[in-house]
Every structure is written in structure tokens, then in C-alpha cells.
Length: 536
Image (cartoon, rainbow, N blue to C red; front, top):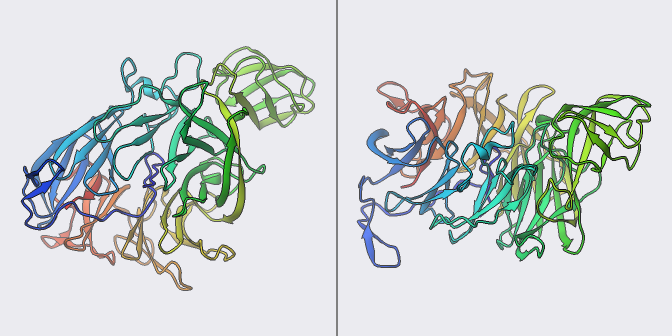
């Protein structure tokens, strides 16, 4: 299963598989029959993450009513991610830096994955500075035996860049004590063979870079004792703030989403297909982090306008406009000022400077090897912050915002016909798109910070005449209910539940509001919800 969260963004088709049949009283867990739904005994259930109470609230999906059942999880639960087989729900507890593994059949937390084990705390997991969450994306294996979480602020000790990839068992909660050090890790994608990860750094102007990284889960690096990490060498300018990836069904091709200017990149958004990924464990590579700074012609002084020098040593390579080729940092005066080994050749104000961290720099703990990949195809799109792949239909769907006109866009890419030029379809103008849900061929896109609807529906995106509507159902501009953070299909009724501005709304599959007592729902009692998921 491949999933990615950009601030826990789930990338992939919605999991609709249930975990039991109507009227079922028991299930077999391998050790004999066990009670099925022993607490609620409901025929159809949805759960809502209540980020203020730190509980999972249960909704009776037959009656569209909030029940009195609630199950405790970690602090500030937000995103809900189903396991590949639908038996578990993984709960992103952002306040405690944990993942709760909730057993849908037993209606209980099976395990709690502590991503900041003692002596670290949830607070020290925020050591990345401006990062907004203690951890971000995670992926799990099909058999629920292995999981990998990107923890951007994971503390690697004083003087070392924060961030790591944590390895855990979703069934037991056991976390491998050796993380894979990786600065500001936020998103992961796992290949279908579950042997490799593609990893991405945070996309903001302080921590982001334009590289993509390959993690070999089959080979431990002899120097670090953790899976080998390589930076993939691609032509300069190929990627602009890469944020997520999907693999083809055979695992030979990866599709990289570049968020572009929406995420502070120098170029526009794109989707890039790469294959022939390889690396040489005997080589060392580098990680380039981009900051904004200024230099003056003839002077060795430089100033950092965004970012920090706190993790860089004397001798670290530095490049940028006005900086001679091969120059290095001669001294670090403060967290925002230093000197060059060679005076600047021209003046650059507000230019991009690149600070390079090699595997032998004390700011980075694990070797970074040199990898290669072949660029097969690149598609320019109007936004690529989130995506959803349909390997059966050979289609990739992406959505994002164009900061030039502040519009949201949805793009369908035909992977079977890579020469075709995809058309970007205008949707609601919210930023920071969160989800794409394929509900019986209609694509529901959720976003935040909307001037118009935070939920857009895209019909027939692969045809010459696609259409969109904005919720509440309107062909033009619609007054938003508020930030959309959850969408889930109720398989029993065909209704669609959404979380908008913390409340739970109900629509039919055409986007028409379902009424509660003659008025548009929200369901009474859901006031601090973040995500919703049908679990049967």
C-alpha cells in the first residue's frame, strides 16, 4: 500500500473494504472466533477523530446519528488512515506524536506507536523549528507487519539536523530504536514489493530542497546500521519542491509530484516519471538545502534572510548568485551571518543560496550515497500538491493551486498514453489541498483556506467535457462551510460524509445536501471533528 500525507496527506484511492458483514456476530483472528463489534453492535459505523477530546467518536451510519460510543486514542487525533485490508484504522495523534492502531473488529486500540520514544518528548519532536506537525506521512505493509513514519522534527542530538524515518510494527507498536536519519522528512512512498521508499523533505522555504531520496529497505548501510539512503541525481531543474510520489503497479516507474511555486519552488508544478533507479553504496552523495540570502560584490560577508546556519560547519560548500564556484563557508558569525572563503564576484540580494551537507559533515548522521534515475516523461500542471493513482485504469489524478491566479486545479494524466497533454480543470480556490477521493468515478477534492467552496466535485475528468460543482451544491461560486479535512463514502447508504469546519455534513454522490430535520446537516453533536472514515 502506498500512502502519503503532506501534513499527513493521504495519496491513493479510497479504501472501501469493510471488515464484516451485516448481522455478523463473530470473526476469526487466527485463534478462534472473537466477538464482532463487541461494544457498539452497530450494523454500519463511521468514526470521527475528535481532536479536542482525543477520542474517536462513533456515528451510526444507518441512522446518520452520533452515538454515545467513543474510544480513547492519543492527544489531538486528526487524520484517519485505513490499513490495506480494512481491519485497522491508523490514527494520527499530532499532539502526542503517536499513531494509534485501532482494531475495527474489536473496537479497541490494538497498539500505540510512540514516534518520539523517551527521553524524547512530543515537544522535542518539533525541533525542526517552523514545522507545523511533529510527524507527517507514514506507510504500512499489506500484511500490517511493518510501518515507516516520516518525523520531520525528530531530534538527532545537539548540532545535528533534525528529522528521521521511524520503523515500527503496526500490530505491536514496537518502534525500532534506530531511526533512519533524514533531515526534515515529511512524505514517504513505498514500492509495491515493499523493498524501497521514496522520501521527501519539508517543502517550506527554510527546510525544503528539490531532491528526491531512495531508501533501500533490503540493505543496511555498514557505516550506520540502518537502511541505505541515496540522493537521486536528476538533471538540474527537473524537480521543483517535490512533495509526493506514486509507483506503477509493477514498481518499475515512479511518478513524482512537484508542488512548484505553491510550495516556494522556483518553477511551476509538474509530474515527473522516472525509472531505472539505482545507487552505489560505495559512493557518497550530498544533500542540498536552499535558503535565501544576500552577498555584496568584493566582500566575503554573507547574510541569511530565511533559514539558519546553526547546522552548518566551516568548510561546508555554498553556492548561489555572486558566489564563486567551489566556494565554502570560512566562518559562522551567527545563525544568520557568515563569511565566504572567496569574496563574492557580484552583488545578490534576496538570492537563493545553496548550502550542501555531505555524509561526512557532523550535521548529518548517516551516509548519503549517490543514486541515479532516468527521466521518462514530465507533465506541466497547474497544481500538484496531492494525488491519487488508479493502477487498474493507468490514470494519475493530481490537484493543487496556482499562486498566480489563486485558482485550484485538478488534472487527470493518462499514464498509458504519456504523449497526451493533460488538461487542468478549474476547481474551488482553496489552498493546501488535503484529499482526492474517487467515489464511483466522481472525484471529491478537499482543501483549506477557501474563498469559495472547500469541497469540489469533478465529473468525467478524462473526457473532453469535464464538469465541476462546488459544495454546497452550486455551479458557480459557493459559500464555504469551512476547511474540509475529511471525506468518506458510507458504503451502506451511498451517502458521503464530509468534515467541514469541524462539523459533519452529509451529501449524496451528486453533491446534493442530505437533509436533517428539513435543513442541511451537520450531524448534531460533532463540533470538533477533523476526519471521518467508514469502517462498517
